[in-house]
Image (cartoon, rainbow, N blue to C red; front, side, top):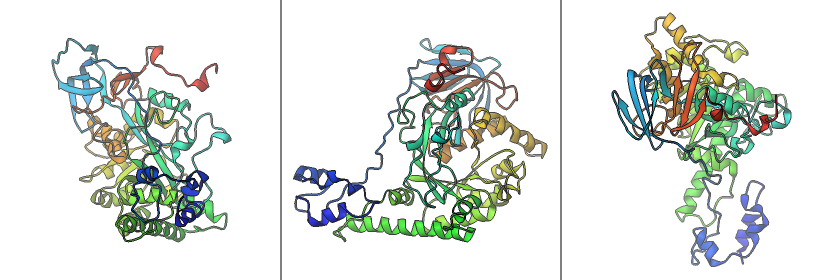
Length: 473
């Protein structure tokens, strides 16, 4: 029978996943061994933390080898290659050059067309705030406590959101779904492959790191201040972050003590602290809704205080003021081209923001949507920035701008070794455009994910419709 200590642990606190009665049944020696404990170990048993309890079931759609000929290629790494061929084999990019041949590959004549990596949106709420927008599907903000690191966006995602299909028509092949910004720490985000699917697991990017959504500034202090709950001020915001990370640091130390044999009692499991500990261990990436320069600087210092990477700042309206600090600290900044002025913390904007951040050595400027509409034309959002930057005298070209929505975005999500650029050996996530993707007349003609065609503007067979839309006008 389980020890008295095990029963006590099983019954301790609403945060413990050992609370369910199934763990109070007799445990055989075999089950205890499966938990990582030997029959001779007199320490209290515990349920090992499963870091991937909802694994990806994504499988690439059927594909065939193809040879894209004579395209203008933007590699996503700052290069433009004219009249260039790209060979795709077994879902991967296998050769890039001119006059390539492969007798077994389907040839696509791309003369006069442009080829780019698949576009990546690092900040989306599709699925958790789907369209149609109805109250019963508003699942992006767990507005019940300032820190809700225990919730996961994928558990509130509706894969039948028609927005996924509309985004794919705009060349989006990978996207991160995030919780909203009502809380100091709002929960885990998830990175998806933008393929038609009926389950979230079938869309999950295999082995992509989880993200953790945090939020600075007005939102959390407004939401909780109205309730008479801390935070009420930006001082309260900072105190709330520090308290959460201090508790997570102690939780991590307690597990280390137990695994080192210096404690006979494991910590009581906390789903919230499991996620925060994942950040401290470098396994989960921070994505921080943060507008103002001084707040981003404080969040960088917060990461240093508790020894974690402060990650990507989203929106970053005042990123241009601390572009050097962002680059020096290795932070990506995901920004809009021209959203500003809708609240005080979004007031001090310049339209050259992305270009100024990008100009720093070792920078990581990203363009994001945070919109079910602009995700459909993220290429043109980047095009607006390119136009304003050139007008202001920045030496930027198409091959530079594409980086903001491809390889830099992949870096922000921790998947840059797999996607985000047209490189040999990478996933064949590519978009064929009718002309420069930064033109207002640009159309994504064909979209491929892992070498499989997932959209064709001229072929209805590759224009997926959500089950929800069947029968709708």
